[in-house]
Length: 166
Picture 1 (cartoon, one colour):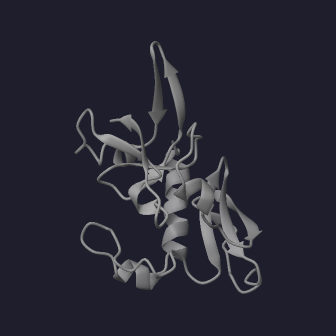
Picture 2: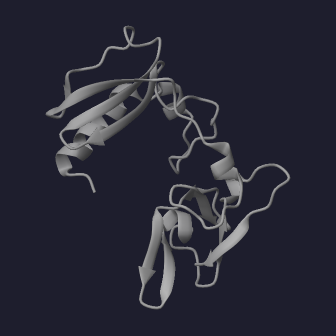
């Protein structure tokens, strides 16, 4: 969980670098119908928080063109050059057994999310992820299917595997 300072710094960085066209395309639920638009302004690939710093990931070739403040809300800024982030298609689009943390899963009515880890409890092996991934944001009921990969990440011609009831 982020501290209040980290959350404020992350919000400030997003306010500085979010793509204005994507923000304008958002509907009332905060979701965008324009998935073809980049999340951030040109040259920025990602923003993250690491302890006492805001990490800004800049696409290679844009390092000099992107102006980044030295700090956000009192947290220093670190610049990282990257070739870009992408999805590891085989790990996300194929059913895996055993299911490792970090792969695509989802309640059968959601698009997809990420499996955090496996948790061993007395008498059961459980999966851990977010509410919106496993319970369709409080709309799931016990016994609902959890699929791997999540429905959105399913490769053409393949099928998801039920890994757990909700």
